[in-house]
Length: 320
Image 1: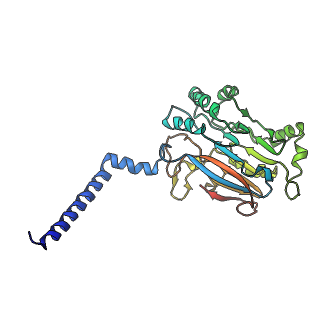
Image 2: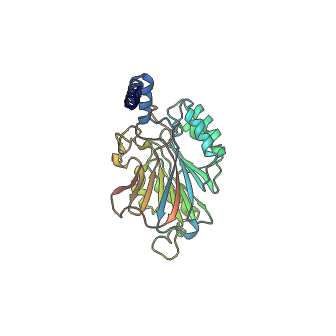
Image 3: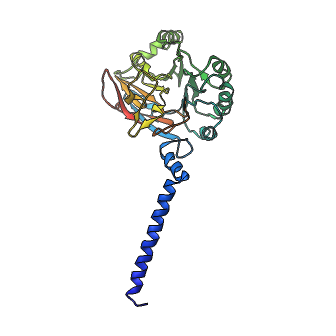
């Protein structure tokens, strides 16, 4: 073999190797396994990648001592049959380093799922160890039976009620959510008045001494305008699953609410109130998600300007 033949043979050999590799990749893509792996790019089963999303929230009237407050949100588990994702969530929540954990409804999927949903919650809730408290509300999928059973869990359930923390510096409000009821703001205000919390809430925005931080739990995000009228700072909601089945670019096809599809998930703003709409951790109707990863958001509060602009419309200032 001559010196000129050796490079030519090496080049031919390299080209052959690349061709074989290219054919192999195409064969794999056309195989059932290859098609399945391509589908996993679109379909999220919650086993690949992190479920945690860290989300900063800036509030102009946040008291200096509350900067850095951390809140985890668990929403829309929709437990039916046991799933691998549930084991991952249970392991994950024991490692959360937060001040509050808020549960925002739909822990079961359909009637008859109460036993499996309670088995999940009885393992999950005791592992939650926030510094200030675990609070929750129910969603439209939660039957009266599971609401009764959940009363024994080591956490505080809120139904048109307000609870004060940090010597009154934080008010956490929870609205009862059921498809047969509408938001009862008067019941919540009456509860605040009984506790003497309405006077403290009047020393709010624009004054030298900031009023209490007011956080709202509501399964339904479409209550945002009413909650804004009540002067809340942030509302935490679920229900929409972020659309669950989406097109690329956060384009939801449906969201089971009165909100426009562009408001299906993310940080919404109405006037001076923010609303964090979680994509949730489960699915309803079909156990599929397309371009819509399940997540467990952790919000960190800071003092700063509100994102977006003041408007009478609802704006999505941080879609996810």
